Image (tube, rainbow, N blue to C red; front, top):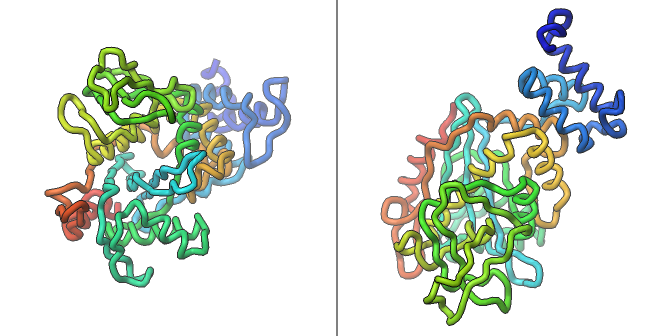
Length: 375
């Protein structure tokens, strides 16, 4: 069919006509005419079809011609680098705002390679950027966002911008965007992605984890090369008695993504679990999530729309307002790989001092320059 059509029309014209038809609701294929900033859900399968038949580049050009250009741009270094922050805030708790996850991912748009680094939550005595007044932040880094937020008059946006400046200074690496998520937002986006396939290389046994107040403690993930993790749709992890769990025979197999990326106690494959191991697990999980949403326009746009709809639990400066933004991001991560990962743990990247860790700035900056330097 396509060969016959393309004999009379250019491929780009075919795409434009197809998308114009489905986005405007012609021939009953779609719902009402869509605004430039959004796409009716019934259009999304047609975008997948156009992608399969005619190619992503042409789809993007056609959509941008109707919805406007994407605002996603690489920085002056030619890379797209994002500070990703996970907060422990959850409903029912008023004191939770520790950012136990502080991760930086940098994409080289030329070869689609992603580099990822994480700063452990117990890192402390951190030199502050001159633009933020200099000095030393003596407390642990997971309290830094809350500190900057207070300094910004309670503004989440202001606090996150200060955190972006600080992490860029620590790594001596430009950071273009930030993304911040709370527990509920994490659950929402995982479920909107229809769950995340993940390989669990070794069994995790966390005897003290409480997935639901009042429930028996303990969370168990069995080794599985093709596990499937869910958000709020997952059954809550149910442990056992006594506390901590010693008899694991009756403990259910957990498939809750939030628990998987948060567990830091107990064992992994019989060896000690840790904050460092969970940070590496988080990096891999995020990459698996990227692979999940890049599998179809429909899923990617559903996740984008859901992220826009939960401002209380998700905040980002990445342009995600329009379908063009979503398609641009979708294309940027096509065929992406993540060949480089690091957690700034001792002894290579930090030194232990009492109950906290202090970064080896020259070492981590040299690593980031090598992995995330200009392209």
